[in-house]
Amino acid sequence: MYTRVMQEAIPTPVVKGMPIAGTWKHSFEYVNLLDSYKPFSKPLPNAVKDSRIKEWQSFLVQNERFLLEATLSNVKLYRWAQVFLYDKESGQKLWYRKILPFSGWRMPVTLSNASIDSRSYGIFFRIHDWLDANMVKVDLDIEPTSSRPSFTAHLEFEIDETKLEPMAVSLLFSEERSMYSYKVLSPVRGDMVFGGQHLSFGGAKTAGLFCDYKGYYPYRMTSTWCNAFGFIAAKEQADQKRNRCYGFSIAENQAKETFKNNENALWVEGKLTPLPPVRITQPNGIQSDWIIQDMEGMIDLVFTPKESVCNEMNLLITNVEYNIPLGYYNGMMVTSEEEHIHVHNLCGLGQKLYMRV
Image 1 (cartoon, one colour):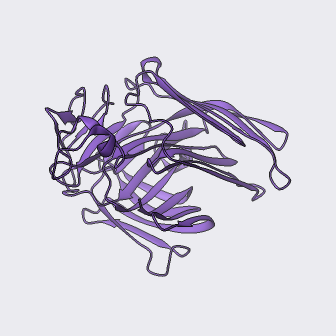
Image 2: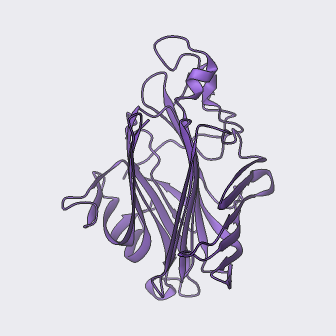
């Protein structure tokens, strides 16, 4: 059975000018990768170092009917905001992406109490990271067009680290360059207006995955993510009194020594199981089955895409290929307590990114 050292909380993953690798039980007080003294072969001004840091926050929320994914990202040459909403009953979907040149702001260096607004023609996107109050708030407002109805959402992720187990990691690309991520699966409440219809999120059948990323990612960045969550029906478990929330976030990236530390996690009722590194393959292409497996016998999943969004941008100085299929996961996972979780038609997202910037 795979195990990993879960360390107690520390203020920051950069200590005395050097990034450190590890996995922690709680969020950091602050994460500023500019504190790394020499991430490149020569000392450089902070402005130059900052231009190489990519950072974003993502939010995945779903209940029995809707799946909503929203991301606010800053890669310094440009920023982007994206929103993907899918109605599982009708098949209706909303896809919105806004790209803004250059870096007009930075993502917060702390999750304790910080906010960021992105305002531009057609969209308003605000995030208030407020773990001091056990929550993260998200506000979205997208203007209607002739082909797209208006969309408004206010969401609150209820993140109480005394009741839920998040995972914070610092992973190394080299001795001097690192990436950081914070992930947690939590209850969500809020409201959404889509096409004139008002809908409420909350109750026992709504959950959300919040992720925060920063990193000196390689010039040619490649990453693949698999994220999904849902509920184990009471009839499928010994305790038949209530459903149990479970979910996972699995990634394959360019970090080194991923057996010791990686960003893969499984949650069951808020309890965290750190997962081993995985291999994610698409033998017949991105729109066919994805195979997700490890070498420890804890992960054996197949992801079958159903709907897909593909982003491409190919310019002289940058190139992006970002595929986001929505689909269903089937297979098996094992917790640290050796409980076998049978995954059956679990709705979630796959994400495959190539970025040259």
